[in-house]
Image 1 (tube, rainbow, N blue to C red):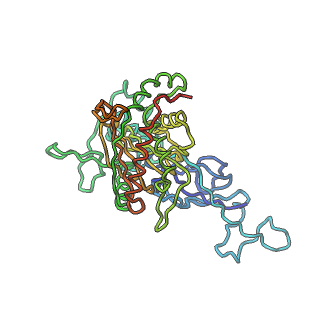
Image 2 (tube, rainbow, N blue to C red; image 1 turned 90 degrees about the horizontal axis):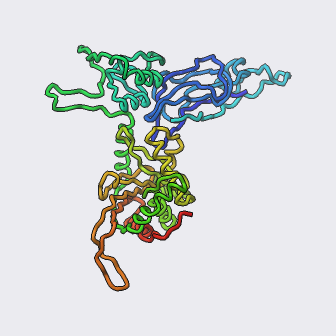
Image 3 (tube, rainbow, N blue to C red; image 1 turned 120 degrees about the vertical axis):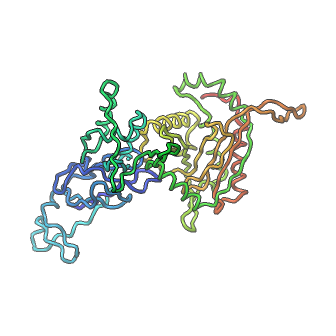
Length: 440
C-alpha cells in the first residue's frame, strides 16, 4: 500500500559511490522481499542488492554502468495493490481516487514514500576492452597472475558479456590443463585506445601502471586528509621488555587454551583504549566548527591486503573487551580482511586508528590521519637496545626491548599538550604491563 524508495546503500566509511553492474529485475517485474533486484560494485567486492519489500518494480532511475552516490534513490518499488492503481499525480491536492477507498466518493490519502535502505554486502569499474571487470574478478586475476589480455579472451556469462566470478574461477580451474589463450595485442587505430593496465614504452625502460579503483580512493582519501587536518606528529620511546617476555612465555599456553595466536596488536589496543578513557578529547571528530566527542571507543587497525592496498577493519567497543576478546577480534578481522570477506559495518564508525609500521621493519612512522578521526598511532619495530634501567642499587645499563610510538594528530583541535600527554600515557600503560599477568 506504499511506495518504497530503494537507495544506494552505504557500504563503508570511505565508500561514497557504487557502480550498477546489472539490473536483475526490469520495470513491471514482480519482486519478493529479499529477492535480488540488482548487482552493484564498489572498490571491494561484487554485491547483490535485495528488495526491502515485496511488490512491483515501478521505476528504474539509473542504468547499468552508471556510478551513483550513496543515498541516492535508484529505484521505486510499489506494493502489488499500489501497482494496480494509477500512478499518483505529482500534485498532492489532486490525488487519484483509490479503488479501495471508503466508498463515499472521498479519495484515499496519497501513499507517502517509505525510505528504505537495502542491506548489501560490499563491491569497480574499468576494462581495456570496454567491458566492466569487477574488483572481485580483478583481484582473482591478480592473485592467479591472469593478465588483462587473457581476461579479454574470456567469454563472460554476465550481462553484455561481463566476466563473472563463476567464469573466472572456472577458467582458473581449467587453466593448468587447458591451453593458454593466445594473447592478442590491441590493434593500433587512429582512435584513442582503451587504457591498458600497463603500457611499456618503446625503450622498455618505463612501465605505466594505472591505479585500480581502491588505490584511487585511498589516494583521494589521503590527499583529502592532509588538506583537511593540520598534521602534527609526536614520538616517544617505550620499554616493552616485560610484554615481550610475557608473550614469549605464554603464547603456546594461550593458543592451547583459547585457540588463538596472541600478537602484540591486542596488547597495544588495550593500552590505547585505557589512554582514551584518560584523555577522551582524543576520541573526537570535527564537523564544521563543532567538535563531536564519541562516548564509544571503536579502534581501527590498518591491515595490508595481498593487492598492496590497505583497509581498516574496526573493533567496536574495544574498551569492553578483555585481552582474549581483543585477540579473537584482531585475528578474525585480519584474516577476513586478507580474504576480502569483511562486512560493510566492520570498516565503519572507527573513532581512533592504530597502524603497525614495525611489521615492515620500520622503527617509526608519521601516519596520515584517517578522516574524520583526529589522531592515529603508529607502532614501530621492537628492537633490542642498551638502555638505562633504574634499580634499588642505582642505574644500570641493560639490554632491553625498545620501540617507538608515534602519534599524528589534528592540530586544529588537538594541541601539543593533549597529543603528547595521550601518547605518553599509552607508553606508560605498556611499560606498566604486569609480567605475571594470568590468562584468566
